[in-house]
Length: 198
Image (cartoon, rainbow, N blue to C red; front, side, top):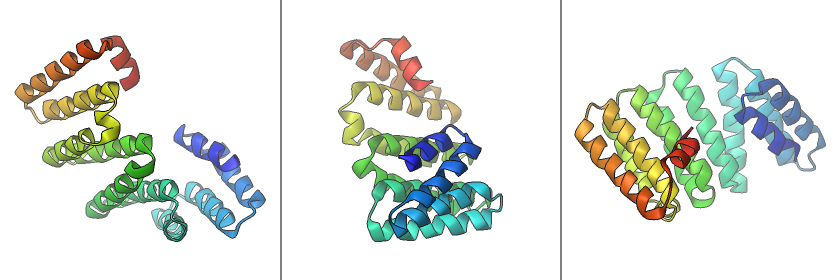
């Protein structure tokens, strides 16, 4: 429970309470794995040094691989990608984000969507629009997107946004018309799309 709270605080960028709760979770954990993973997360957030962060994350990756906890393992790969970006190691960041995506799409679709967004943002920031488009098209083929018309519309809008950044207005307009058509068919309002997106 304390770990979940720490993870939630970290997502909200409330770093100090997150460190405190990871430390508390390490103290009260019944298992060696729990103690180590939580202590590593506290260390990761406490250290400014990318090398020390990477060390703590690598330890969690190894624990995650042994225990086969796909959710935690995906989060660790995503955290390692953040460190890789900080260190300007672009190929390693890409590899870790792809690992995180593959793991999370099996069990945690919401996490997979977040990681896919992180991956496409990463490509766009590096002006690699074709890879960003490829990553976004990949998520559009996933059942957890195909079977959810609202999410499908959101992802099509995200894809259109990449085409706009690539200066391909024609493709962006085609995609946005498609998103609008799905919205009308399924009875989604454009306001609902905006509120989901923001």
